[in-house]
Length: 213
Length: 377
Image (cartoon, rainbow over all chains, first blue to last red; front, top):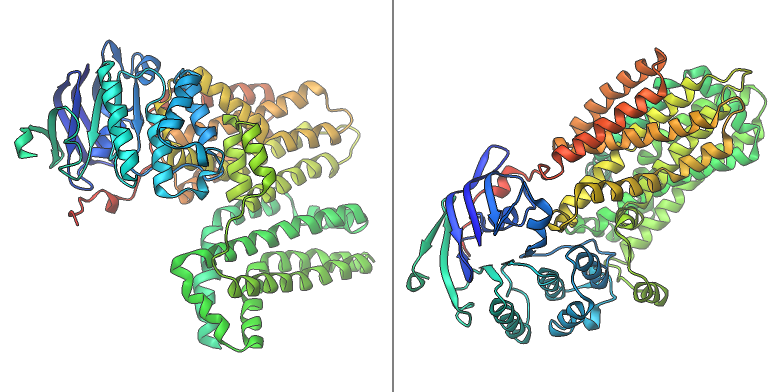
């Protein structure tokens, strides 16, 4: 599904993460790591949001050779989303939905499922962190992605929404979507069929056994 | 009283000038780099003789005044500046004097410039206009004192949503090209209006200063060059805005062509006021073909500057240095009569090349301290 070769990501000469060879097959993958360990940088790099050295390929689409197809099939939900405060959730959702070629029914369904309707037309500058998180989750599920990356998807949202996120992940997973998730808390993804568990530490990504998690 | 003034000087006055070095440098570069002192005197004679133009200059100074007020009031919203609210504990007249001191310091560039041109205005017999100008210059800082006093006694203002904006949000979805313009209106209105006021004034100035039989188009080209360079600060904001507030843009499946069209729309919209001013004040003898080239030259400069931001992460200091050199290169190319069409093509092609080459390579460099691994709490 996702092949990563010789990936190196640095900021101003400072190496943050390197992945010599990693193949992620279809399924739900959990990435653990301390704050600042490079999880978010790794996720953002996979999402095509940061420059890097190396190669990344999603199914048959290379991130550099087929940048549009690649980005059409990989979505990303921020850990701590922050949007221009004058935009509403509706503005953002419609904008991303158009780019990701999402149907109106999918948009409506995500808005309803994540409970965005009450603040859909309010500027994001008035949102709580939970409302921002719900908006970013909705954006991450838009379109027909093959891979959805969710960085700390369960922080700042209430328990009812957590259950709905589990539900969404299970539904999309059943349709063949691969997930890359991150969370600090060990217990949070127990409700999901995790295929592989990785630890991001010392600028490397290592697979660990679920019992070690 | 002295300790209070010292604190205000360090937290507000020095900070204001430190953060606005770039802006003031660009103004100085245009005001005294291109225009000679005689031109300033000639321009002031023209302005003092026309109530309309004098009103425009008052409006322009007023925008600068708003910029200073906006800066101070924004600082008062910062948690790190909460201690300034202790000012309410000192006697009223001392507080007012302290606030007046702050505003007078921020207002100093306008006072000095007005004193300079006012001296010559007085000498040529425009006493009434000069008195009006000085009265305006001396009285307007008191409105800032009132504004600061109001904020000091009403900290942490609530954000209220109007029913009208609620209606608009329901009725319309904002198009992408409007995001940055809305950001400027919302977060940097004074920078926007001051930049636009300044650049429109440049268009007006270069169209009206030298009304000769054979208009030298190089003057208009120099105006276009200045307008393009002045927009560097806005483009730096665009670069930061997209990287920091809309990082999701780079995850969207849009081709570089689609993205180019979006930027083209945005840039054309950004320079719409200058375009309208040129159409309105185009000097006789200057062809429409040249006017289109003039527009294309500014557009090309915007592409080139934005392309440079994508190519390399700039901070304001580097931007200033590069902008300074670029301005002089452009200045000599224009003075040596390099055809404007060639300048248009060069800047556009180079800008679009940099955009295509570096769009996905561009990243906002964070401070190295932020990269260190933090222990789990």
